[in-house]
Length: 101
Image 1 (tube, rainbow, N blue to C red):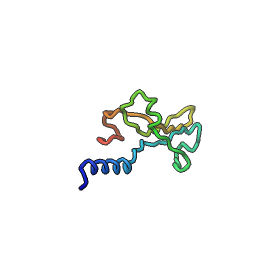
Image 2 (spheres, one colour):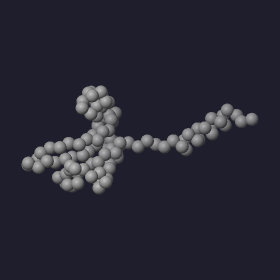
Image 3 (cartoon, helix red, strand yellow):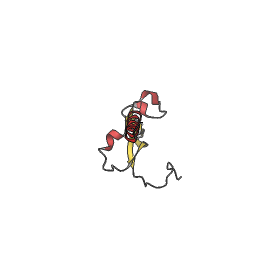
Image 4 (tube, rainbow, N blue to C red):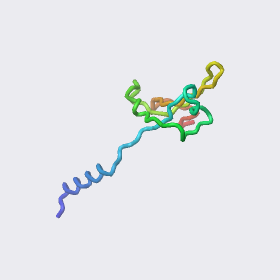
């Protein structure tokens, strides 16, 4: 007869071997003043993505949520598009991109 400890051990081993670690959010990180392909229209097949979790250790907001950010600004009459990782606290409120909007 198989003991309960053997069943628990076997189940634990199977779970450890089959569960994969999760991946963090990945964003495009670029600026159109450095690389024109970063601007609009954006062709995502030509740009590499960045794992935002690699930068999270640099952030003072270690308990925050990683999100992708796209900003556009006009510099010397030229429209610059910047795509990057950023971090928001989990209580950042209601906005046009939030779940509550």
